[in-house]
Length: 494
Image (cartoon, rainbow, N blue to C red; front, side):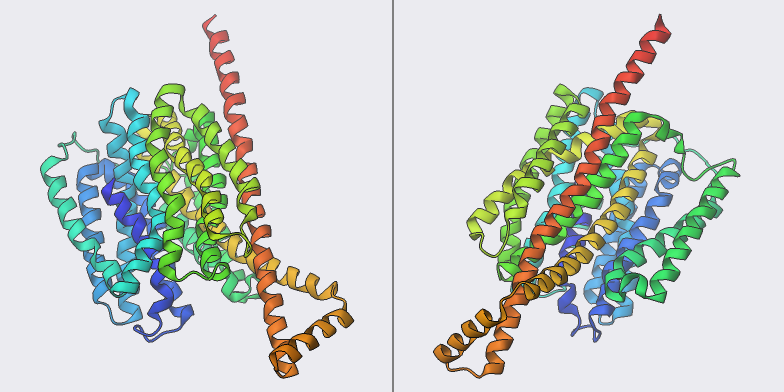
């Protein structure tokens, strides 16, 4: 769990410090964005080889290799003085994160007996779900009291301890399998994934489909996925065994994860720190502390979710978590705006954190149990791939929707104004403050822009929740298709 926590925490911590790297690395904001993009892309590609590597060399060896590589890459990031060197190190970090995440899941799932798998995943989810929300707090603290290099250096001693502990205490594994690897399918899927993730990360910056680059990336992604599908259809040894999707529990679990976590939750992971920093005007460290409040409840309720999964079943726990998530995201979070007192804003996010904490463990248990131990590695690879792709879509949707609704609200505010009344009001302000007319108009325009941004959060929060509504359709299907399967099994038995 600690290795996975370290890897995911590093992702969100780096998001906080990236704007501060333009000076030290002698680049602009567009340049430093590649620090995030390179990591995300390399991690997604690393996932595609995890199943093969685990079966070939064993979970223990791959996990320890991943932790060692992540630690060395962190050291290289901290020592970097150029953009190019830190990007190379981040690529290694991304691949290492993929190895750590998949092997951590697989080892925990295989080491615990069936009746305790839910609890095990709940404890693991404590770290995995807690880390993204804790990132702004840690990033804010380290950058405020130390410097940006500490964000990377802090991983090194943790990594050394994990490698030593792993060598001493992780059990020896069974004999490994020599399996063929489909390099052609891997190449096409890698190209498609790289193009898709770069398109999503740079779309807002380049103006989406007004940009030739975005159009080219979309074309490459589509062609890459099509060629991958053709390669899989004509291969004896497929890269991914899609027969898993015939199992309704696996299929619906993956789609729930894709839409609720990727398309919806990742929007809130992006939006909440932005809300506190830009609407409530909190400094970076205070923003992290405000976000930590709901992150704390994610951590508290993750083991609870694991226990519930063992006691009442993963399906029921997933349904409860999704219902609570819908309730909080539709009824509570849209109330966050400039006028919301800070204490009230923090309190409104606590039920949201509880819902998130209850979500991760049962979905993981549901997907992995339905896949079976023989396909445990592949099930985790697919879940993490869905997390990367869905999360990239979610973040892109959040940034795009914020810009769209900010512009829309500004246009509406301008349309409905009574010019004579506004002019009279501004003249009074001019007289009261003894300012020039141009300064007064600029102040009023900035106020309009700020309020359109403020109201844009309501719209964006609501649209993020709508994706969870779509995900809840698959929660319903989980029970309907499961009941149909039970009827078919009982009929066959007769």
